[in-house]
Structures are given as structure tokens and as C-alpha cells.
Image 1 (cartoon, rainbow, N blue to C red):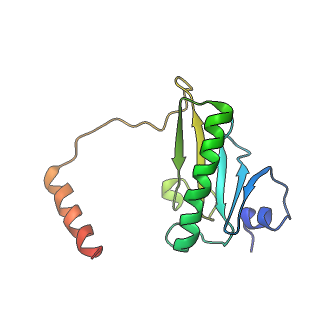
Image 2 (image 1 turned 120 degrees about the vertical axis):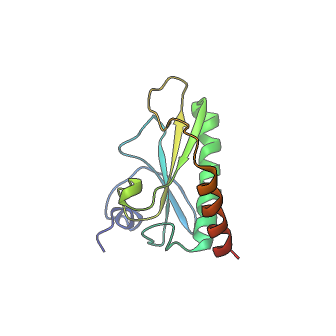
Length: 136
């Protein structure tokens, strides 16, 4: 398999590892949005959220909270983003489930904001009904 995160997990590629447990590995992002930007990666290879094991996903959020608390204590950011992308259309660059933990400071100029544009209420309701039916 030619997966960079699997190679990091297996020690084939160096990385700054900051946390590890049975199901997850947390590394520093080598292309950080801000100082302290980390990635919490499932140890088991899963291309995206859709294929990931539920227990691995639970472990990722627990690990992300631990890392976020360390970031909060050590770096004292004004805020923090958790970002997770699935598929190229969502700008997922590595096809292995991972969660970005990104410290944010007021005025850092990095973005992630988009203009609030009211949606069509009827359309929202129809989509909501459709999804609710699939979740039963």
C-alpha cells in the first residue's frame, strides 16, 4: 500500500509523533495552517469516514480532545478548529482517515469562514425528511 500515513505508522517515514494509543497516532502536520497544527490518524487504514471503523472514530475524537487540551494549555490559542475531509471534492489530500487539530488566533488571517447565505426552507425541509428516513 502506498499510503503516507501507513508508512509513518510503520516507521518507514519519519514524523514528529506526539501521541499514540492502540487505535490512533497523532503527528505534527508538516504543512501547518498555524503553529501547533496536528493530525490525529487512525492506525487502521481507512480511506475516509465512510470506511472507518466506529471504534477507531471514537478513539480519534478522544485523542483529539487530549491533544486539544495540550494545545490549549501549551499554546494558549484563542480558538481551535477540528477539520476532517472526505474525498477530493472536500479537499481531502491523503486518502486515509485523519482529523486536523488546528489552533487558531484572532486575526491569524487563515480563514475557513464562508458567507452566511439563507437556504431555501422548502428544500432544506425536503432534504431533512429524506435523511431522517434513511437514519431510521
